[in-house]
Image (cartoon, one colour):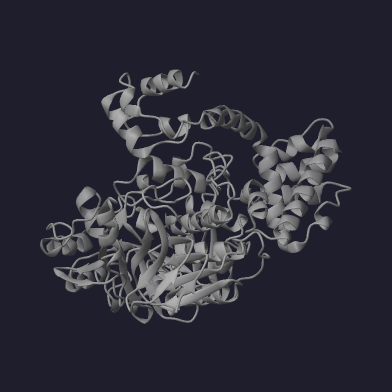
Length: 624
């Protein structure tokens, strides 16, 4: 019996779910192959979505019509906007989620998506026809055929978990690893390497003394992640708690270092520099006597908590003794210890910007298989791979986002241009145009693109247009309205900013850093603009208007710079160029250019080892 689909997605994590959903929404008959249907988009590490730069990515996925933002809102138990003390380019939404609800909501979404089917089994081999991927074979020998295959295997490819000197095969606690695909792809000629990541112990909340810790509540504004969700009160919100390690904790950890697989060479994979294990921290930052820990709830109705900041692969005894030296955890009991996991990944320089592999056509990689870390980075790659697989199937132009358009564009370009030597994590500092790539305007940047390719629906466009009209009306009103000192000085004094001596345009006052637009509009006589805004959109509209007014000059300047740089992206490099013939280019430059095969001068200039003089020679060769 022959099973035929348009697209096959292997792996049911964050990348796989977004890839499968996007492909099916675009009309492709899609099969999602996963080893466990009850673990779709499982939060393997901490139960949170978003954070610095990661929150922007989730907003971008949502703007394109992806599901991560909506699922986050449906399972949210706390919301916080990080970096509010800094400029809006740095504001980053973050949400604590109910781990079980998150997975349940994703499964509902997958099952309710037309054209999307699920198969529970391990995919062990690709079916190839020459240099084309045409399907997969499962561990029981079932063969599924398709026009494209997307691999999103996460940490499961030859996964190996470590706790002290004990190690077992597995892709996640309690789940088996996946074998066969790495070996097959290595034989074809793919570069396969090893990465390492880890997770923290899960603890019994009944044994925690929260009174000794600092409570961290969510924001009062009841915000949401998705542009489609309505602001509203979170059902049964939960607090996080902050505590710290100390000298006694560190001393206990040092005693266990001789049993650490990380420091005794048993772990060969490279770990994440920006999310190190606790044993990494006490060695790398040995001058520090304390490190901050967040005790995060795993859900609304569970006593299980996650110890954020205490990732470890030390023996169980070392972990438990050290945790019991932490303030508030003196009597703590564990549900399971932290562990490290090693897994196979493929250098992403072997990919095109569509995330299709260069060696095998119609084969796409997305997620941790490309050397990234984090749910958000994985989901972003998933939606890009799913979109491009369908577009190629339909014979349409590829969907590639520029670095000036989105954090997703920065992520993909970094991966395929620079490769990775450690698990890649997104930061705002990786983006050259942060003030353009804010969390509040992801819909303005990307929703029309999503609508054009078929991932974003009409309702999203209508909601975006309503937002743009309201913001424009408020800005126009403030630009035209003159305010008398007697009407506004009392308010200005109350917010500790100087009063005015004569009539001025309202927009000049709105531009002051102390002025909050929602409150200001209520103070202006004759202003009816707030009445036109539904209560569930007040925060969104107010925030967007305020940013446009206060940062107009910065935004215009950055757009001018972005346009100049974008011209280099328009200078395409022929596919058949032979860099080895351009002897004036440095040897390292020729080697890197030959291996990565950049599609434009802009991309070539971002390759490590390619110098500005190499770029000038390329420009001369292209007649520029």
